[in-house]
Image 1 (tube, rainbow, N blue to C red):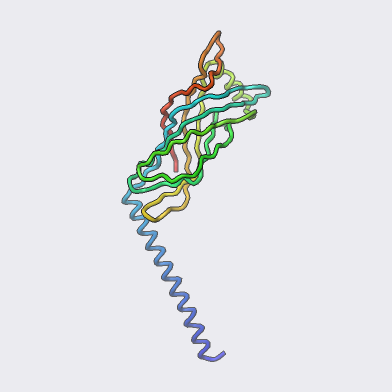
Image 2 (image 1 turned 60 degrees about the vertical axis):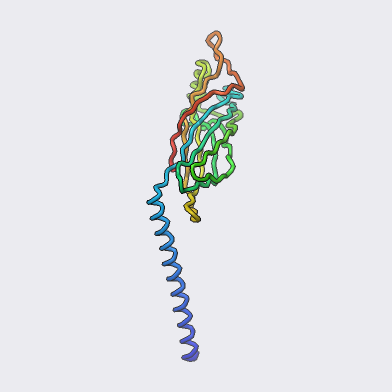
Length: 208
């Protein structure tokens, strides 16, 4: 290889190195601007409220199987005036004494603008879902008492939009307490009255 060729090869390496350094500096500046803007805007977590619940079915049968069908209304508010939120993935389900008792119901992805409110009314249900023996006994007792205390949960991922910049994905965990009456209680036995909407207006805890 001639001296001229070696010199040309060395210049090419230096050029590639300069380009890499330049791109690194540019990325660092963009990230710095984003974090400064983030700190100034002070982003707040979305606020969720469990508005109501409607029972369409609830039955505990042997051997400790639960079939249930609820429709719940959940609202989410973006409290930020300059930050948008992408809900890329949301699953809603119900738990009883820390045990999941329904399937996951998927809520479609959506973008939430500044100060916007989104309302969802998904069905949360499960058919012949096995439950722990102690939960089966507690569920039967709750049904006999005429009300049930559930936890409605939403898990998913969100992204934040500041101007034209969109962040990476963050895990979202929402927990809503729900005390739901069953309806009429005759002769000491509560009968599930279906299709009745119970207003809850219960604020949910949100972790991002």
